[in-house]
Length: 475
Image (cartoon, rainbow, N blue to C red):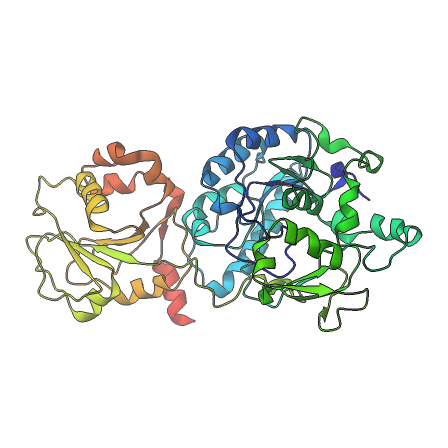
């Protein structure tokens, strides 16, 4: 077995809520009648307790981004545990098929830079990338030097966990060396839950599911314990199959393989999975012939399959158009333009619309027009709550380029702009950019012009796309 101090990561489990109910989940998602959500005070203690641990401090679930205080948590983690050298931020638009590789390259680059700086300490995130990941994308990529992402749209294999070694006929003499070589305890991490600190993340999950006595006190230095100090927690290994079986089933099956003793235990806790009959009884050591062979704990044959190439969850959900009516240029709204956008925001009514697009009318654009007040009104009344496209040009809206960007993964923290020679600029930005959140309605209201508004962003987040479009067209 391995001491937590020698592990590559220690996890803070902020919730066991999850959008999935995978087969043989190590957090037993689908078995809980009600998920937990770690409170703020416990999270602060958890982070403080890891002072001196110089590897990865991870935030995990369940799905951690589902926690209502997720952004507050990761801000605190960054302040207390973030490396001096921050990760490079992915800013340029990319195809969904390029995302996983770009994240991987970015992480290797970050690791090389921090180790050259004499440090291996960094923050980590384990996520399935649901909607909240999309909304927190900017902050996530500025804080986490390590991300372990899995959208569960792949053929990952999960081995049975709810298994008692005694149900499989493994004797005491056979058991000890098997237990001490468990790949989960040796290759994964220890963890902190609302019930305390644990030598193994699966032991922590079992304690939660079966209402155990809890873990060690969350205090500085708990993670320095050696294996001989695990005596008060090691009983959980008796009902964990992590060290026992080398086969598993597709995570997407949603079925748990459970031995007899554990079947009775999940029945007693009224597991929703048990009640739905989403469990299968393992009758003996060799009774898993319908499951697929695993490779020494590697549950994906190809690590690049963690994220599906056709997963568009991080692409813009909708784009609203903001086009003030310039006195010397008439509004030209054609069918292609209107069907591109969720909302069309202008100063005059348009002659074409359909059920998929709403029109938001603002006061006449003139020399007294204040963009900040206009934007606040737009956000509060129009339903434009995702990406927004802005141009002064009413005659050349370049919808084809907007459509291209709508199929890309964009960083919500950036303002993207492009223009043709001698033409007005075109801008694309996100309504939930940190620059706008930090400024607030009052700060935005002070912006007299659109240029004042753009100045709310840091200059390195104002990204020109002229060369990008040239390269994209050539490809």
